[in-house]
Image 1 (cartoon, helix red, strand yellow):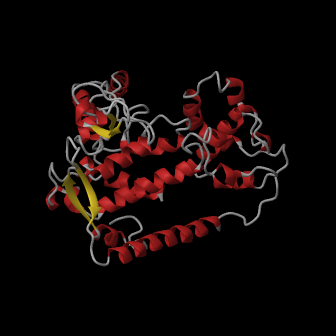
Image 2: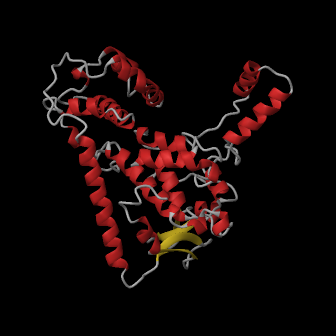
Amino acid sequence: MAHQAHNIPWSLLASNLHWSTVGGPNAIKNVTNLRPSMKPNQGKELTYFVEAFARNIEDHSLCEREKYPLLYEPADPTDLILDSALVQKITPTVRKWLSEEDQTNFPMEFAMYITTKRNANVFPSRMKREKHWHFCGRLVKTLILHDEMNAILRVCALPGVRLQEWWENSECPCNPPLLGWDQIALKALRAYICLNTIYCLPEIWDYSSGRNTESDYRNSKFYQYTLRTCTGTGQVSEVSAYPHRQFFGIGDTQLGGEFVSPKITGEKAHWVLIPNGRHPKTKYYSLEYDHYSKLSIGDFLTLEDDSLPGWQTGQSDIALVQDYLYRKGLPMELVLEIMSLAKYEPLGRLSEPHDPFHSSNQEELAKYLKNCW
């Protein structure tokens, strides 16, 4: 059953979509996707779905807000916002995004805020320098990912800290707004809608219901676009992609982000090039990449980084190898050391890699959808 199926009419949404493969006049390869069925009542039914979905988000948001005090007294500048337990909880995530920073723009002494300045002063009323905003923005997103809403609500009560203005932001007006904490919600919403919609169409994910190579949800533009835009790299702040990379098993630099053109070379490149308008002087067509659904999921995952193996270790593979070594008479401590040295470990949380709807992944998929919600 899809998540929140008793409140959100997922089946109604899915009934207005159909699986089809089409090719345009300039297409080198056909594109498979879920497309509108153009039913007579489609407009009314989709409007009903959108309204029910939005209403459910609002109702649950109000319910979550009731778990915390209605009003917060402004904290004193010396009051502790990040206590020791909270710091210990978020430290692995903070270390990850600190390690990704260019130290010329983000000096390590400022990064030490997380251990030396844990009081209200960590959120200055005015961001005097760009690095202040970057640090505080990442910190807020980290707190959201770890469900530390009490700390965020205390920050909201600080004089002059206009957290709502951080919802959508960019480095400059010429760049896409990818720095705000809205990215947490957008990626979660995108993955949530994609996977729940697919769940209502078993013929594209369940072999007993008709799934085959031609009708595999992973080869659709819908799924591949969601996968890349939720897990891709290339953004100044990538905190919002962390939970999705962990679930789908995507490396930190494996896929490009939403506004990053894929760097594709080799024999696969010509499959995904499309004309993009004729140059006014040369009369030649310029080319850009539109690679979604033009490759199988295996080729798609290695297209932008061919150093990655097409096959990935799963939980079942690890258990099998451990059992083989244990049967040879090796003590468990040595077995675990061998596995560690060989780096024989899964990249993500799925028992069967790169197939969220595999029967062995049901529990992790349910957890992921709940976390997205």
